Length: 76
Image (cartoon, rainbow, N blue to C red; front, side):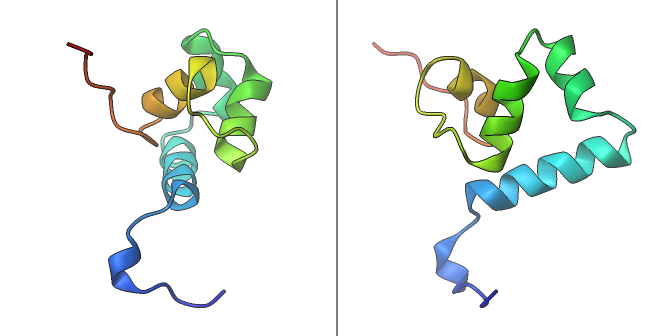
């Protein structure tokens, strides 16, 4: 893979890989993480693989809980 220009920032894939590594380092499986939070395991895997865009609904909640997306601001 070609190196990215520094101004491109961190991608969702980078964040997902960091999240998976952090879970692994702490002895937590993705399945356990999902179940502890009441998420469907297949949906969590879909978000982490980038198969689901996580723009709204449950997939977005998963992305926020995993730290892939920032906490949404309250609408005023």
